[in-house]
Picture: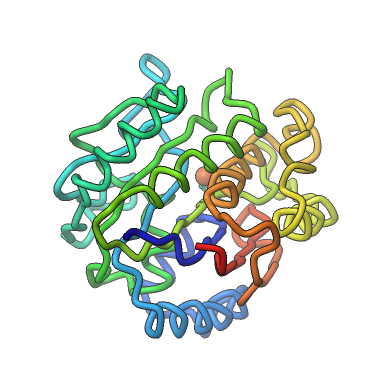
Length: 280
Ligand code: DHB
Ligand code: FE
């Protein structure tokens, strides 16, 4: 039987992966962020997830303003990272999980989430940042991945409450898969930032989100996207990726195994939180 082991929320910022590639983590101001990831690496070594479902927003690589799915899920057998303007990335082939992916698509549609199904996708920094932090930026993670993309780029966005419900449906889909899979849910995005207004960070809002996401995610889902943009900046709506991840956990109050908030990382309120799903 498939299990959801844990949920990991993490900010995605290109400089995180580029610093890892350069091996200069000890030299940057946000070194404490890397240090805290040692706990996530140790968790992965002992718990041995076999699949990472990575929930993130695509930044114009697969979907642009001319075709923008609200929710999309990858069912490819493999994926490659794309050139996002920093030069050709180190060639890496990430293993997909098409059988579980198709099971999730069918289960989601049966639950009224009419998701787009992608047979081919390129990965951007939003998908690879957390994987790089756990398993290294120059190697291939020892897990299969399922990319789940939500639109946090071009309005209209899905409502935060819909994202929490979507996460619940994702968790239900995974738990109804009869083959073995040890799944780590990753929500990659946020927290507060607005790239057009460099440095717009709302630390009290970010810390409130990290508090509520554990036992009261409905309180965050009660915001609408206009309120989140006002409070956390235009790209602060990436918080929705954390809500999807949290919705997939069955526990009402998961155990927080590790967390850190460090601001700024680049132009972003940098956050990480690992929650175990003991109810799975
Ligand atoms: C930054 C943050 C993002 O979410 C992103 O997608 C790109 C850059 C930043 O803070 O630099
Ligand atoms: Fe982003």
